[in-house]
Structure formats: C-alpha cells, structure tokens
Length: 301
DNA sequence: AAGCGTATCAACCGCCGGAAT
DNA sequence: TATTCCGGCGGTTGATACGCT
Image 1 (tube, protein in one colour):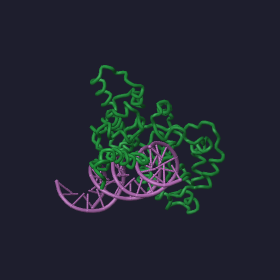
Image 2 (cartoon, protein in one colour):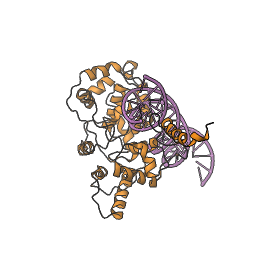
Image 3 (cartoon, helix red, strand yellow):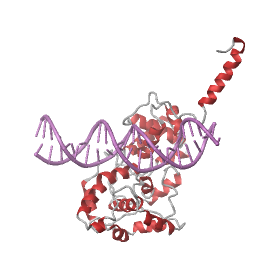
Image 4 (cartoon, chains in turn red, yellow, cyan):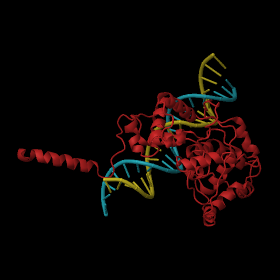
C-alpha cells in the first residue's frame, strides 16, 4: 500500500508504468473477446472490401478496430488474401495449371505459397485444397498402376525433392521468367460479385466516382466483362477432372498476361510479386515434356 | 423420398520468423 | 537485449453439397 501523500503522483506513474508494461513489445492486434468465427457474410465482405479499397491491404491489426468487424485481424487477412482480393480465379483448374501444380509439388513439396507464386491467380489455399482433393487422389490412383521405380518420382509426401530443387536454384539466373496461366471457363467468384456490388454501391452513394487510385485494384480481370454475374459455388466441374486424364498441354491459351501485369502494377496481390528468379525452373516447368519425363507422368496426365 | 457416405472448400489452428517496442 | 505481436504458412476441421442406395 502506498501513502496518501504520494498517491496522486504515484497514480500517474503507475498508469504510465502499466502502459509501459502493457506496451512491452508490440500492442496486441485485438482482444480475443467477442471475436466472431465462421463463414463471412456478404455484409462483412463489403465492409472489409470497402475498407481495403480505401486504405489498401496491410496493417491488418487496425482493420477490425477501424471497420467495426468482430473478426480478428488474422481472419480479415485470410478472407482478403484467399477470397476477396482482386484477380483470384476460382474453380476450373486448367490442365496446364494441374500440370504446373503436379510439377511444382514434386519439386518443392507442400510449399503451397511457393507453388501459388507461380500461379498468381490461385491462392495457396485453393491449390492446397485442389491437391488434396483432386490431384493427390488421382496421382495415387495412377501411381498404383505404375512401375514403382517411375512412380517413386511422384512426390505425395511433404518432403520436397531437395536435390533437384537445389540444382534448379543454382542454375537459375536473374532473367525475368513469366508464367502464364490459362483461363478456360472461369467462375466469377462471389468476391468479384461483391466487388461489383461494392462498385455500384460506391457509385450510388457517392457522385465522385473517381476516388483514390487504390480503387483501380478492384477493376481487375473481369473488369470489362460483365455478364458473368453468376456466383461461383467453387465446385469443380467434371470435365476438369476428366481433363487430368487427357492433359493436352498444347492447348493453352495464355490470355491472362494482362491480368498478371495489372496485378503487379497495382502491387495489390501479396505473395505473387517478386517470385524467385527461376527462369530455368520456370522454363523447365513450362516444358511439360521434360516434366513428364522426370515425373514419370506419361500423357495420361 | 429418406438416409447415408463421400467430396469439396472456406475457415480455423498452431507454429515460426521477423519486426516493433 | 528481451519481450511481444504481426504476418505468413501448412495442416486440419467442420459445414455443406452432392451422389448413391
């Protein structure tokens, strides 16, 4: 207990001391009390998107506070990166994408973020899910029909093929390699719909249609299109699954360059800019013939 | 039509490295 | 320098959709 004479001054010091103790290191992003979990509602999506549209992604710590969302910063970041950010393509993995995932998984193991950096329109979560639900199963099935020596090259375990990775990385140069992804029929994501909804909402709520440059981040790949207001349910069409059995790497339409460029220009897409300078690796990846030979994946994939 | 099993995917969990204080 | 948290990542889970009997 402290004496009354020093009470007032000590009170201030105490408060300051407390503040110092509390602020030791970085302050917490949010208290865990009252944090909402589970699926995001469209309203929450709109709030988050509109906030990021105004402030840009980053500083996730302040997002729940500033938006009033009852979500933790981590949840906001995940929602944005995995679902709401512009340029995300959902559903309908193309044969080329499937091939790339298979190759990269064999090279890198379950480094989904690294793999996703070569498929800018796909999130690591999407790739991970697709691998676990489609490709892993398919390869396993195929593997059972393969000569064990060949099939051993297909990496279904988390361990990457370090030897080859090391070789590839050593032989890499600084030349900018660009990986083109293909786009077949693309479901419009609900995020895109939300973005459009938001755009409309913003337009109607404000006569000033030209807001900050950050807004351009939401005029992404489908920004000229559209009628595909169909909300994608994220399910995978059967034909795409079948396509794995009949991979035709020659039929790739590299029509997503603009999107890639746009995303890079905007600097909005996390984890996709500045991929490692692996033109050798990328060339190798894009050379499906080599990939298939090394992987032991014949044309059936 | 109902019940059950399977597939899919969004979201959470926990860990780690690095940054902030 | 120590402490604390953020941001990123991979693994896992749970809700829902779908298909089969």
